Image 1 (tube, rainbow, N blue to C red):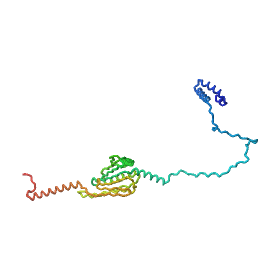
Image 2 (cartoon, rainbow, N blue to C red; image 1 turned 60 degrees about the vertical axis):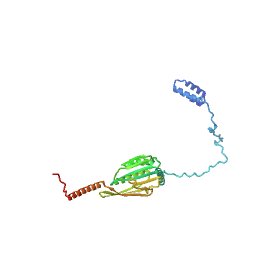
Image 3 (cartoon, one colour; image 1 turned 120 degrees about the vertical axis):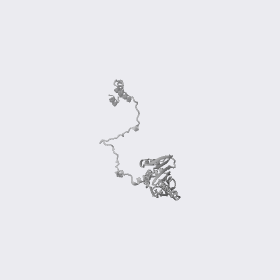
Image 4 (tube, rainbow, N blue to C red; image 1 turned 90 degrees about the vertical axis):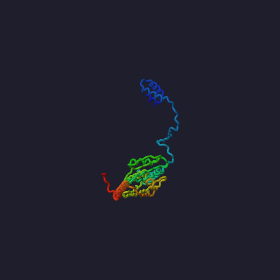
Length: 303
């Protein structure tokens, strides 16, 4: 009923009915009446003319059609614009784009990996017993992202290594005393992990050990070859190689192959002990001969 009066424009009757229903016992009906009463009693707002669109009045003739101008404008038939070029299905990036992205990532990785001093010391502990110590030190006195990745990969992929933090940005990686064959495999794994952390592929170093056992000692000839020909120039990178705590030293440069060799003699404790025993036995026999020549004869028990 209220909406019908609102549609007929009889707002007074609609307001009176809403006020009566606002005192009804039904809470739902009373709430609706109050809402309608708020709408009906709201002040009317003037609507700007630009909010409405006014249709012009058309003068119609007897035939029912509007007045036509003496000159009709003919629509010019213009050619339709050409359709846009087809884009086709989405294609993956070309190979050149992938190479460019890899080059940029490699450059960033190498830049972050720079300013590092790597020192490898190869030590001969005995006949076919060797150990190696890697000192990786950052010149910025803080741990670089490359060092963190390198340490995580070593713990996951290479066994038999002891990794310790000597100072800020200084890592020391030590191997156990093993044979030359086992140490060569371990060094190859370490170099492979280091290259993978830096984003480059490095060939495995070559470790050769030749020994000749002369009973009293062992003649040793050790040769270490490190190939960095595939490593691009990295600013701040210093690779230093040494044998037996600096007895032989060399610096490896990017794009070159470095060879370090040493030849020496190592006494055999077992052979020296056998030689001493042989000398003592010979001395004892010589003294017995001298005793007999002096007339004392062989040693006898007292009568």
